[in-house]
Image (cartoon, rainbow, N blue to C red):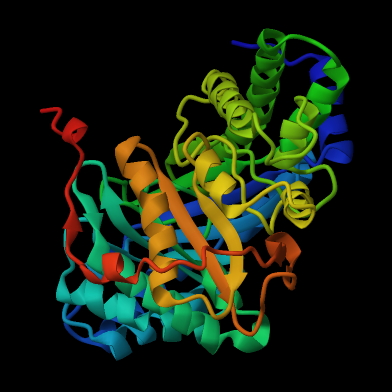
Length: 454
């Protein structure tokens, strides 16, 4: 059993006060399988009752733990069974009713977001999944706290290009419907390959099929802690730098493990995982880009960025797994543009482009996250960007995702301000050349050869 020293306590306090250390989220996963009913009104009532009873104390418990240990807990969230799995014969209008029910439950218990308005369509689409996808623009426009995701590919199943096309159309429509709010609706929708079932982060959280009845998952943060440690280390070798990152990741994850254990006991719900991802914010210094620059890059996006990010991601995982009995979710380094002040600056000075970001996603936790593109970008180009990102995940047997925002009425040189943790996104250029004929072929990209591991 490890012994916590006075220096450990003082160091943690310093991280919280000066280096933006926080627990980004406590997320309760809730199964909705027993809510199923052929009657849509009864289904909605069952969903509302279950969420509001299971998660009624999650906000209070989070606040109590934060007060007890002095650790900021930024978000309290809920994820549910992918809604397409429990919708039965629901049509698109019925799914919107379910979406509003989820949103109403989130407001009742006072959480920040609720995730799981989702469908798993990597190999094909049921009628229910198609209806849910068609409902996404209206559902996210008419709700405040609901998040949605699609898993359109996996290494085992390949890539469902028809689902990607439906996702592209949904993104475009959602951008238009929320145009008076800088197309913010698109920030609540993400498209995955190899989506994890225990991810506590939004917008991609859902309560997977292999999960228990109810579970507590915690997501930590701490880019500022790692950036400061690297800066203090000065001119050391990369081997030494890797060890410094591992030690910081251990300390950050230890805080998450403590919070997860306490929340599990207080809520009488099993502990699931700690997601040890470095999740940035728009706050100065709380940036993955600044970590990479402190490693020796003049600007994030220059040559060497992908190598530096690969090293960072690996060291974070190696350090984090020693601090928790169960690491899961995404676990690594996030590179969302709008949510990372260093990434924003790198884009604005011309150091970071969409193609480089795509290359970086091959070695980091998620993918093209919170990327604002011109509002007149075609559905087919949006689909092409998503397909490229998804292919990286399928071929490399890892999770990748795309959260794209074709900001209505905006062009390259403009920016969109979402406020809060979502930050400000500069509009990034996309290729002027078409991929429409490729996208319109439709069908399925077969799974890669290395998927045959049985």
